[in-house]
Image (cartoon, rainbow, N blue to C red; front, top):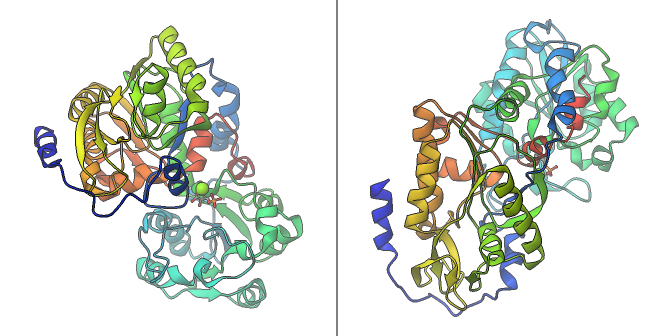
Length: 455
Ligand code: 3PG
Ligand code: MG
């Protein structure tokens, strides 16, 4: 940690490379435009938890799903396997940028293959709006998947082709259907479409945790055609088991780290928390709410009341809220902007905080090191730019160290998962979830339709 902190001396002042293309109004817009900047959407409501009831369907899924994946007889069966191969790709070269979700589905795919079953893989890929479009084609993941499972894939461009191929497919073969969202019926949860998909196979396995919050044809409606022969795969079960460790009787002290750009309408209900560390863009709304001057940092004035009520409820419940007392402020939203370490409550006019400062790093890491259960959702700063990565990186290392000392650490949400992967620490935390929205909805106490459908 000392080394990481001393690196801050590199935050020397340099002139912006180009004139400011940036206005305070512009920042939130680029943040939502799929730029490399993190958006993370969480806020905490420390009211009476609705978990016990809301969580039951999910909890029950472990015991009441009709079939158990590991003991089911797959031999010679055509297995409709819903996976989440929605991986980030380069928009120009179509190169896969992170294959974590594909790798995470391998144990389930291989189990079916090894038990003489025939996987018929179903997945969505991106959000196509008007039918087939090359940038959203699953053809871009075929060669990577073939490498990983060491088998050729039979790729079916459309449902007609899949219907033909599935008729005489044999054990040892693997079918992948083109992006199910090329059919608008998928996201509409269309029953006839679900029936057509169902007719391709003999049983249904859902391993698409990342899509479990979607009530779509291939995640939810399809399951009704397999009243007994439906089950969750290894990944889905593992994700739920990990979430369960946090949701039910977490070992204490329990700390949640939240960050990213926005305080939003997502409500994360967590009981038993001792600490909440708040970093990233959302921290400025809290600092502003307490009377601080945050310059042109991200600020959601319409969320000031929400911030105040969270601070109030935390106090009432004896939860310690840790806000960054110092920040790395930049003169503009540019990777090489001039920077300075400033108190977060007095950021100079027109300057913006883009990372937490060294004192905050030291304090946050200290809290993490004393915690037994840690949930991390959302980066501390613009970690995609090296000069503003230190807060996120330091916390990531603190999480790895805590894990080595026996704490349970769960990293969730696309941005935190990318951050932990960037620092090559994914294998040093207890679990990195493949879910973004799905994981957040679980922590909101919502029932996930993809899981409910399996019960
Ligand atoms: C995700 O990446 O969040 C899942 O694959 C679900 O995708 P969606 O948000 O487009 O439904
Ligand atoms: Mg999503």
